[in-house]
View 1 (cartoon, rainbow, N blue to C red):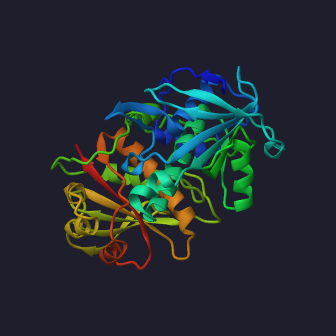
View 2 (view 1 turned 30 degrees about the vertical axis):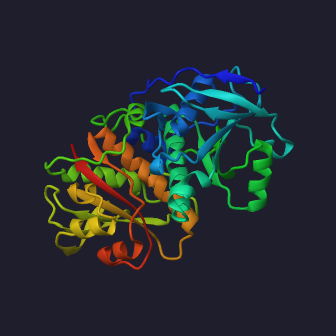
Length: 385
């Protein structure tokens, strides 16, 4: 029988917001750590796959999951964590704000580290949990969910002031090696290295965005919301969501890890009821944080049809349509979309707005509406409550 460690209950103790976390992350105001506390371990694992509430016999988690299929598992390779023996552990959270570690195995020689750090978090996918419901399109949803999970860890590590980087695992040989070490039948898709040395840059300072709900509270409160009011969305709120979800915070970096040589995802905005904006189709310029009008008109009804007639698409004040760049690797683009989508969720929650990630739509119909010949990856309505 495997031994278990009961982790401390997750507590939302930080008053810093998502904007604060992004500022720290982008400007590398983070520090390498050869060791972390068990409370820090608890926070990093909870935001990845912790239970925030129970409903209908299910444990809903800190990241959204298509059809509540929950294809992901998280493993902690603890190199140096207070009161935790160095080893490989499986993380589980079945009650709100609680979690535990189950000992899996000693750290395999292939997983020994050459760069001192405290922890590796491995995200493992069990595709069949999702594909049995959604068929091959379910692979997209799993990759999206990996991105949501990655971004929560990146943001929380920034709140804690701990450096963290991410490696997406593409090589099948490497996946098999990690799979064997973890003693899992799932597919290891990403490793986040917590405490790894990084190059720091000039401090920008934190404490901005005080109108927002603190990030840790937003992570607990995040929901998929499908019912909206008739009140208009403010342009200021829309631009803040765009900037801190997919915009460039400085000239080189967005608010989430770059998984390739360049960022792979762009955004089109369909506006229905936003103060100060004409109804129409807009391209988001992520470098300038500007909306560029493509054409005037009301397109939310068209998108509603393309999204299998899901009412909240046309009930929202606007819809964000994310698309992958031409020639982009679909796997990486869908993971990146998930990271962006998690930012949108947390920002909407922090602003008392509603949103939901939609992956079920007719690709060709969405492409014809937004007038691009590249694959749409997500649709996310933004609605007032």
